[in-house]
Image (cartoon, rainbow, N blue to C red; front, top):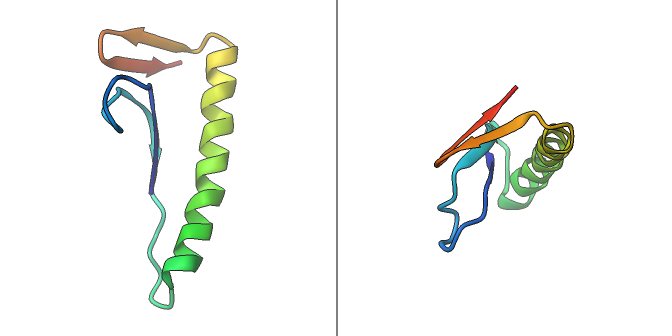
Length: 67
């Protein structure tokens, strides 16, 4: 799957904004799975950036709420 999170001083340690799962298929290779993950990742990034640009992301401490 893939995760979009706020950046902080760590590596992948910022508050999670959104996540999506990607199924692992029986005939997947590392390359085919990686390509499917990238497709979902791009869609998720567009959704999150759209929410941020329209003011639908609200940060409270380490929690991110989307409306």
